[in-house]
Length: 285
Image 1: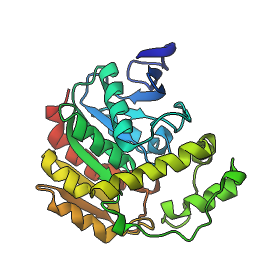
Image 2: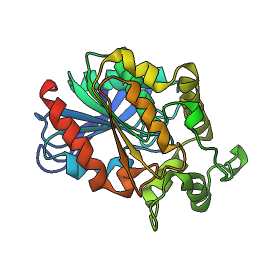
Image 3: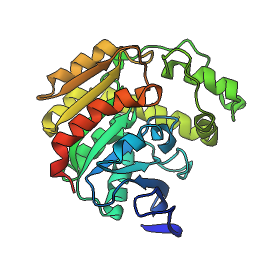
């Protein structure tokens, strides 16, 4: 695996955003880094039909004390979208691990939003040496916590979808009154193929069908923070209590916020995340 496109692209100082494209065996992966390169590593993994851009409002609050690394999972954002590769969660977790190895990261606190929490968990299952602690943001713990959506599905004949179709499709992802989905996130959904959209969503279901997340997390013995918008319209927020079966897990509910608190209210999301990271950052490089 190599850095392609002429190497990393850096704007300004060594602490400015650095973007690079890593060439893996099954496709290129887009990576961006912010913050001091010698600070403890904090890895952010987006959810389905999203990308590194979903973390944009949160990143400036994290870079004072961390090297913040974001990755577009295969099939998303500015990463490759091959039709003949696996999008199963363990394979996505493996790619993340390979990318961190290539970046020279030895240890990281790993944060996953929504289904990004499944890739984060898979990474911890496969590479406990890399993962110091886990933070999950509105990651559904089991399929019985899922809230069926009444929004119309987008079919293959409607692909690529219009902005309005995407807004309807994504409407349950937000609950804060007056919140407007940024145009760049609408564009990121449209940049996916119908195949990658459906396969990545199926992969999340498959992962939960095989084993509920608290049951996966318990034997790992990793420090765990769970942040949940209390007004989540995709997963019952009461299901966050299920994570308390994981020894030492800390659960934070955020009233007035929905499935995407990292976008709906970045400061309130950053506060518990930074407090958690400060405790465990001493174990990262």
